[in-house]
Image 1 (cartoon, rainbow, N blue to C red):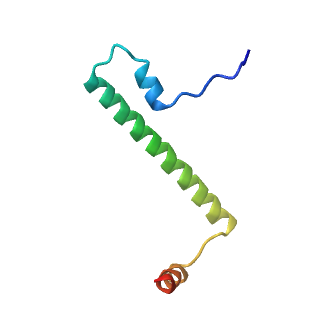
Image 2: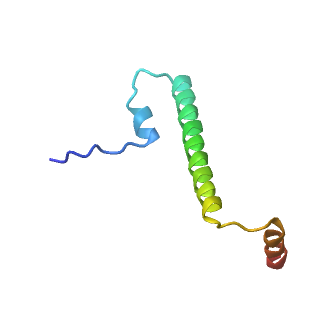
Length: 71
């Protein structure tokens, strides 16, 4: 018997809420989607702050030169 809880996705959670009507399900799904986007954004910000602290940065001009060279 596994003691690790099974990870559910948003659709599984919503499907398990039998008493919600379609409008309530849509609102919950939208709220969960927004929450996931916020968590993803925070993770990217943390990663970029780590890059700055570690000196893994490029100047604006260097980035623009790379973009122009790629075109």
